[in-house]
Amino acid sequence: MIKNIVKCWEFGGGRVALAAICAHSVSISIGIVQGYSAILLPQLKESRQFSNLSTEETSWIASLGAVATPVGSITSGIFAEYFGRRRSIQISSVPFILGWICLGLAQDVNWLYAGRLITGIAAGMSTACYTYVSEISSPDSRGFMQSLGPICASFGILLTYTLGYYITWYTIALVSITFGVFSTVTIQFLPESPGFLLKRNQLTEAFDVLLWFRRNNALAQQEMDRFQENEKASDIRNASLKEILLSPQTVKPFIILILLFLLQEFSGIYTLLFYAVDFFEEANLSINEYIASMIVGVIRFTMSIVAAFLINSFGRKTLCTFSSFGMTLTMIVVASYVKYYELNSDEERILKYLPLIGIMLNVVFSMVGMLPLPWILVGEMFPLRVRPIMSGLVICMAQMFVFICVKVYNNMNEAMHFSGTLIVFACTSIVSIAFCKLVLPETKNKSLEEIEEYFRNSEKSIEDLKGIDNNAFEIQPELVVQVPPR
Image 1 (cartoon, rainbow, N blue to C red):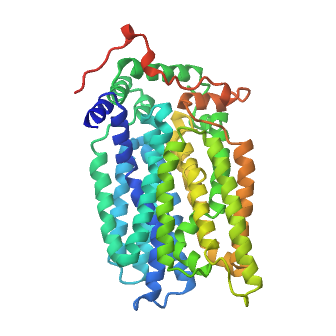
Image 2 (image 1 turned 30 degrees about the horizontal axis):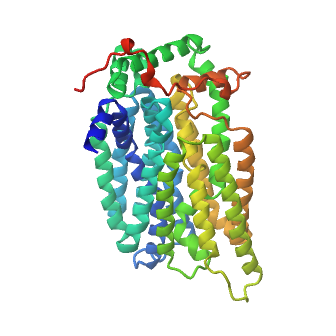
Image 3 (image 1 turned 180 degrees about the horizontal axis):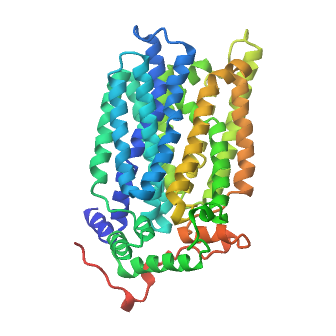
């Protein structure tokens, strides 16, 4: 076991994995922010100090964690562009710490607003981790390394739901400070992404970073050559920023990702996360709502790990289509059940656990594709010269969609009843099936340069691209210069 770990480290795979874990550690804090309102709001209702909060105030407490995130996403893109991917991730940990301090020491609703706002900004700033990990990973390992982000976020959500059952909301806030400190310290020891160095024309430094990660001169040089070939073939090499932003390889992935995130948010994935406890209470389940939320958290965390392995076996397109199909079926079942008993409220309920099982299966299917994969695709689909800026912009708009969904959830329930809200989620999932099947391109095992080439050349199918040579170590032995472990 130890020998295998040492071997993995010597040949670079372990170094990429360690760097990816450190970079994605900020996603634990993101998960805590996403799940925090689910345990915060019910505890506030039961407390003496905050029991008189209005529905409008509680909806703002829940949604401020999302409304501030777009600001952080734009800031993240700017920081990643000018200060580097690594430094941008590290800076994002500071507002996490400040926000949790505000929540942990909150004396009135304004402190709660401030804490949720600041942690929301931090959650948006943290998304540079996806750009960083995509640029340090090889094409065949990129999907797995990127899926560590959703795993860490799911762990943060599960941790929040579990702690919410045992300890107070302000204690959880103070405990969460430790994750911000951990990210700040560990990221300091990571090298900068080779993509950022190549963009700055720091070729020697970029080669040294690639060599540190790949532990093989031939592989590092292969990636350098691929980058330079793509630069020569690209029609935006000498273009202005405006021309790059309006080029097909920027506009096409932007539209695809915006529509994909729109379908993701309006299928109810994040609404369930932000209102988990209230959601199960609304469904009239004969089970403790906190326990139900913890069960969902366990399923989400487990399935995020399963998805990390599925993503290397199946394509992004296939997983998203399958995920949407499963979400549609489960949401239709739950919506039909809830609608029936809304119309026949005097009848005694049978199959009382059917809504819980349906929601659990919905979470299972969402974790297979539609929840994690859009975030992974953000780090894959844009050209290097605008990758951090455009990734920040897409995530900014995605978080705006999250805010809208979270903010209008109570209004939707009042206007359409709970069953009507669920029907909207089901209809969105149906549209998502068609979109993923007919529009979403497949990026599995494609290098970042090949993905850019696909969007640049509309006549070429992405399946026609050669993909990555997974037989990296089949290079002629006389051409390989192994770097001894340092």
